[in-house]
Length: 280
Image (cartoon, rainbow, N blue to C red; front, side, top):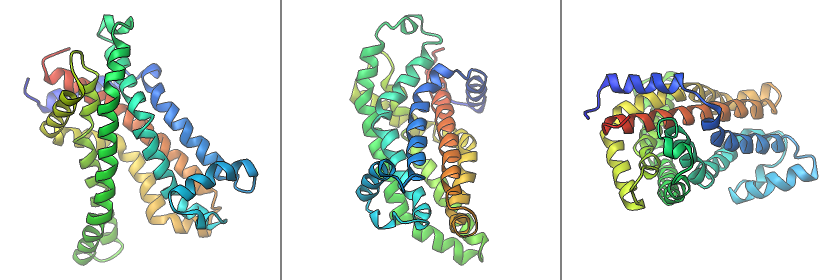
């Protein structure tokens, strides 16, 4: 079936109307781990807080920033590493689990557990590889493309508008990269597939539906982008003029917004994939 705006809108509406805790729960566990890490980040004066946060900070190359209050200016970067790990490694199991629970709405055999374990196991490697590819591409985008994009916008427009639009362009570019990979887990949980076929079908459908997927993923992600903007563009102001611990609160809100947006994105993508293939 040919993709259309009507199909995409119906998929979005169906996802928003059919929110279910059992489907969102896998993403909540990722969120809970992020919140736990943020809670520990406010307890660096304790042995147990430092024992959890310091090893992660050293692994990310920032142990020199573990001193108050400069640590809170670095916390968003540190959470980004934690977030990437959680969505890639545990996510390789949790994302397909969410998708199978979503498809169990209309698949009676799947709702009774028939074949769910084998499909979940088969989806792990494709989802993991897609996650690793996404993290690698985002790192490359921010490392190599971001400086040039920011410089170009600052030449075209004066500050602060130039810097703001440059930041927005870089952020939207990141969304554009990830939306091309979002259908790999969706393809991987389908019946009668294999890892190579899932990766191929997922990327091909991601390219085919890229404009539509980018639009609804950005709409869902808008609250997270707003909080991210505040943290990245005004983080120094928050640390210097407000209580530095407020950064951890904002990051908790960001993690929540990202978690819900990710669930909605995969839910919409799952329905769009099935409908576009002529399935219910």
